[in-house]
Picture 1 (cartoon, rainbow, N blue to C red):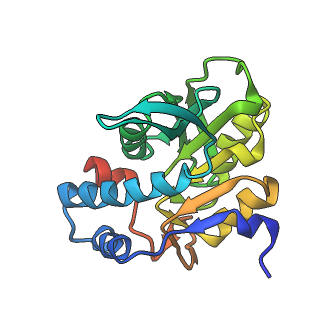
Picture 2: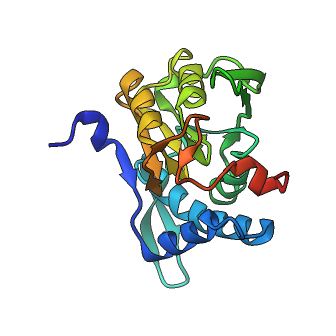
Length: 220
């Protein structure tokens, strides 16, 4: 039986995602092909991550007749928070699909010795008007140790955002990272396309795909 935290983890399972994930893992894939494959998966991740957003009914007049339709509620605030720098590739897709979302960049880099995140930028606009109606999507292709993810989630929880309104969206996740996040915040949601085996001694996901940021921005 799944625990409450495990029930909040969505792992996408689709032939197109598996195909593009294989492209991403291949060390011979060039930057252009890598980014295209990542964007294809990103759209599916955003669809899954946003399916719980509240909606409201509005009337729309078609060329035929007036009809009732559902739209995303305009009473909520949506925050997309990419963890720099690799999370930027996700934020482009989120902006395409949710043009009314606010983008809050979170700048962290990993201390290679301690594997702890070091903050260098936090684009927060201050207190949220209505934390209960604020929905946050934290964007990072790799959920590895979970240390950066923990800091990002904590960044919003301490502002009064409800855990169940926070989604961590990743391309590949490690069991250690999932345990780190759900152990501290069991009510957050995690959306990923793959849970890999483990982490190596350097904190990289195995088998993974290497350093996502380096491969996205061609700085290998």
